[in-house]
Length: 405
Ligand code: ASP
Ligand code: MG
Image 1 (tube, rainbow, N blue to C red):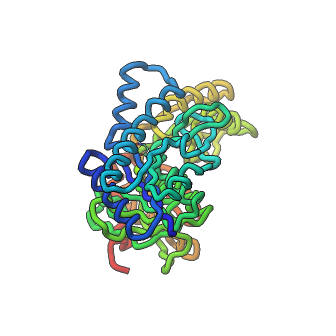
Image 2: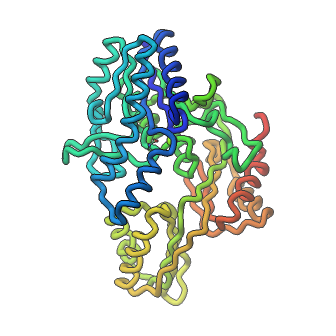
Image 3: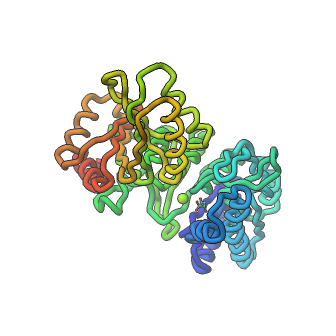
């Protein structure tokens, strides 16, 4: 029997009525001849609320207990959904990540899936049940503790489960209709994509398109699991994320990210090994660095700027200041008000002039570029935070992304 993995995000299970709607969809999918596994997120904004609650109890970080706390969110939605499915006269069973055999590394808050045992899931399916798995969580065989996979991690649970079960499709149900050429909140004329390649989706996700967690797309690509991103509010076709797309677009979309901040280390002596002395301790402190720009050196010193998630800015600043002192740099500055805008498209690797056109459009809209980074299929610019809407709208229009292709 075909196996379908369906993942429902927080808005899709936000209240009792929505949970009953999800149950009805899962039941219909099973009745039309599929084995169905459902992965759920926590209801509505409950993960955020739990984080706020913890911060009211303590200013300190308690990684293990934080994971115990946050995994409770998904436990609530999975149990309620199982009840709603059983009310249709269909067997159902909810499993925590650890019961489902989702094995992870040991880092609390951002563990990675290293394997899935999945026997209880298979047993449940063999008994004709709709099996529900709590998203975003697993279990470290090393520490025997419960872990979480990072924000948005239910996507990774779903795609990794789909890969393990060799599912025919992993459906990601969400509150938008699919993946768009740009965020429709910024660009009303943004168009829903029929399809996008894993490679492009990975770049879009890493560039801030929030619709899918980047790591889930990596699983999809590695194990070739087709992902269908679609709305949980209606049954319409969404966006297919897959290996090959029918048409190769030069530019598939514009993504933006306002969640990063910039750190600049001034007056770094220009000699071998100093960049390593800055970035090694950042890595040891668990800070993940995105863009890095080193300026041309003048008078034997240079400035190095890099961007990090704003949530890691305090750590990054502390570590950078210590490193700056150690290497004799002049000082450290942080800048909260930045945004990153990115153009993504697999066809740009065979096309001349995309970067020039992008920079021209930004300048025509009065947007100054502060940092640039590229991959073969992406160009990203850091701009002032206040310029993000102008930049995204300008690029979307300038590359005619809203027009029917
Ligand atoms: N509930 C978790 C979060 O809000 C995981 C998820 O929704 O994917 O990040
Ligand atoms: Mg999500």
